[in-house]
Image (cartoon, rainbow, N blue to C red; front, side, top):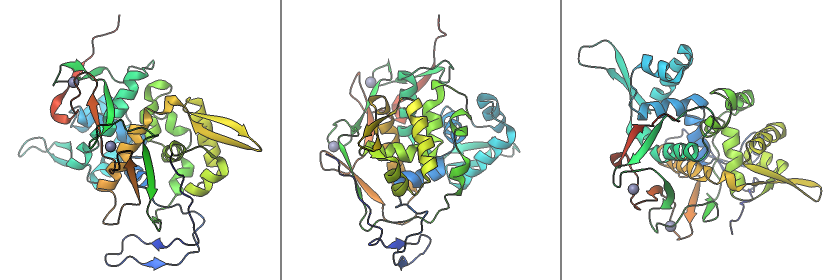
Length: 335
Ligand SMILES: [Zn+2]
Ligand SMILES: [Zn+2]
């Protein structure tokens, strides 16, 4: 069973990021709007925008030029410009001339961006399993090792066992770490995130990634059922924010609510499970790239006892899925 970590704020030391030498340990009195750091939140501060994942997806498909991103994504010019600047600042992409001496620039993903591939596969596999009205993914990913259209499971690289919400334990750092990032932009982003890139099932995964609070709540619920007040306290979110996101997750069929005594208790539904690899991938990516020299805020431990490093393995041939053995093929038109 997975233990839900109760956070003892009185005991908690506060590690101030940005200090080069010994971290400054302040004593307790937690700020009201502070939640223990998680790798997921650190990563989502980089990725947590509905457009960012779509831009990255496009870049992974080979799109490089500003005008091509604009055309493929039908994204407002100003929005695209801001997101690309953000991605460059976060060392996810860099600009270079399309050819030597050429004035036109192209945007190229970095190793840090390509390291997100497991997360991108989970988005794609989700869409494949839950096709919506909008043809958001008019291509197939083909596993070249076996030549079949990709169907894959998220597995532990140590034991090859499945990585599921039931087979992973989240062990928070002791004492917990705190990031002093502002929470301000959360309140502004509400249901806009789900509609920003179109409505309906089609973009569920991409738009969920674009909503930090939704992801954090889902991540918490994967660790065990909880209620609104506990989620609000653990995540340092307003009760109304939590309530709104739970409603959204319920409407998406990912979370159920159940009356237990005087409380409404929320738990993930089986339909949410395909998001687990996505959140694990983003979280472990955050550990690799977003800790800025600080220790990891938590450890994800697989049933086999090893720290979680998940990869997708092909369901047809059993081989690992990687950038060097997949290819993208336009899908034959329907009908
Ligand atoms: Zn394992
Ligand atoms: Zn295969």
